[in-house]
Length: 409
Image (tube, rainbow, N blue to C red):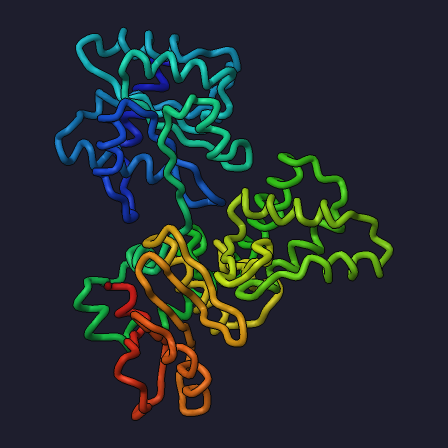
């Protein structure tokens, strides 16, 4: 059974045509050199299995391996719950006694006692790639149970450049810089539906909406309820909707508590604070701290999957645009804050001495408001916009950047 599984998966990978995502293959090569397990953690239909296949095919294209080196097993499709990695290794060796395998284990959480089995295999200096669902195991927990012999790579929905690739649209740096108007409508569609591959590839609006609703109902509520055994469905549902409606601003948990109390829904404040932590754990939200705040708990919320705001907002592109910029910034910088005291600046990056203000539509009416306090800051000042009126008089010490130029920096 295992021999057949190994051979069929090799054949499937060879025959598969893939739309490639952005991935740095050198990252996995470095991890293998350190004799660590390379782990892909995925967030809600980010197509981590297809990315795994892409990694394999690129390694083959670079002639670093042959397809016969691949021992790929998807544990979600294995019916025998007592199977062991030793049995898999022996099956592979019997098929390819002269080859050195790379073991790739999809949905590793389905394998009994997998931490000890993986460590044993790693101690034999095999190269190992694993994937798993964040609903079952958090990355920090994985590092602990695998004795820190693992390198985790978080896989998120498509970014805008990947979205263009999936749409079959040219996205060279020169194209993005020269023909900005061509990409504006694509970008608005991206802000509306975000980067779930299945939704990007579907043209039917009803199908898009149903897929998105299914993601929220099954992957969010089910993830939370299964992992944390939450019994108060109404409070959880209410809390998630309030979080989705509060993105790009500070979340007031006390107000949510009082609103639930007014409806005679019994739940403690501690439980609501726990809900907040849980939503961060399952990659629904990310957050920023006010650099000047004395109480660090008060945070500004952003969504990892902006499309979920469709359930609580109309097409609020200005909120989505700021959220988009935030998600691009966290790819580049480890530490980001916002500034809020007598005035607010959207993003502050201490390591780079950068102050960043984001505005969807820059015009004569909002110009003073957007640049007034930004211009008073020291060091580098950046204003990122989606569209702007002509002939605006903006201080030369402020770097004014169109969203496409921001993406190509």
